[in-house]
Image (cartoon, rainbow over all chains, first blue to last red):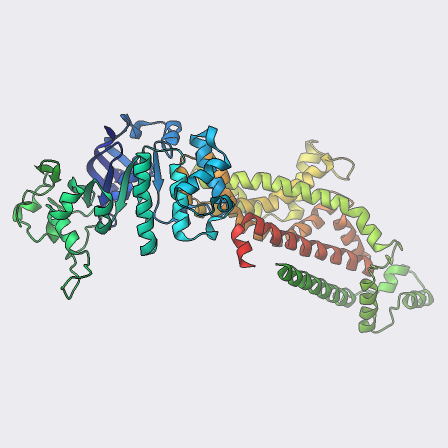
Length: 320
Length: 307
């Protein structure tokens, strides 16, 4: 069953002649209980796409110029503020990149979790429920921890608190925006294990945003690769990792350093990500693409179903 | 933490001692004959001589300072040269008036500055923001004595909305308190606005919004508490400014408080009374700063970890 359906979402920063297109026709569906990874480099539009689900990008400067975001069949782009506040943290919860900065420094963590409960599950806004949530995310001695301030916890523990807060309302969709980027490598694995475990126990869907292809295989059912405001490849995770179709995905995977690799140099994608508002005509990856043809710079290729369930925005995907 | 508190107390005492010494030297360096101001301008040389001997005015300055400090150490502020009233008694009878004025002023000033600052940050760039910005900048540059006189003339004398002067009811406090609130409130509105602007960009505000907290609660609970941390620091030092404002407003509105007492004693060259009012105000500033220090730790739990 489809939980979330983003349909050709178009979002600008600014309006009129100065408008910069940050998200350009993104379509993405997430089923109940499914984990989807949104992968791409910084500035490709993956975070604003994810924040748009609960309309969390401030307008202005953002300006939605097209498309719809159907959450349980209702368009969040058309919702009134009161309804949005119920959706936020209620149906869709967020976990952000820097747990230390995402927790309010002057409130005890117990009261911050309880605030979520009060907003979405008023009947369960008790210390006992807060302790149960902290236990659920693997925080030891939760009874004493509820009186801690955020600065009294490590980064990994803070992120667990953020996750507990996100789970307070039993959301249908958990959006995790680079949840492990700011953490130590060993802690990263713990947090990802926790997310996977919670997903199985609670049956919620996860939209995981990352620029790290390494964690895709462990987590995702499907992967969407974004480049310069567009989805360039959408595919089941295992197949994408085994055999990427889009030249950008291939380049991205080649640039992941391998522990037992024989290469002397790390392979990097030549050139830079085009700046927003300064996209090349035609295929946006063409200037950096090893297999680009003259026609690539004429028109933006469509996202086509190359194989069953596998979508790619490149007519030359068969080129090895 | 107890160590830290002891250090703070020690330095408070040093501050007060330094204030006492400096004020004593300063008051005695002022041109004017203390004996003449005690005995009256027509007193004969014999009388003046008697007065000088009675108050040890012929002793060297340092000896007199020593005597004064010893007397101070016994907790004795001495007696007025003019009325012979005990200085501590005079201060204690007048302090409630000043305290009532300060508290009323502080409450009015916070009630104005906090909502204005928060709303300015919320509606940044709107006509509301700009109007308050101009008004606040204007209020910053108003001298207290001028503002007090204007309010008194227009609102009390011409329009008759408030009592003109004296202190017989709470209503008598409103205009003097408003004077204090206006001269300090504008600055605080701007300060709160600036801090709010910064805090509203913090990730924890975005996170609060993402969990469904309403904008009003975000502003007044999540953001304000954080934006208030730097304000509390400034508040401690500004109590000194408040006391100087009190001197002007009390005199304009003829309130029988510490401010009028201080001005009278300066006119009379009433050295013990001058010393008393200055030391009392200094004690007040030092203790308020101590309280603010403790308050600061309550409002920002991270501070505790530093001790």
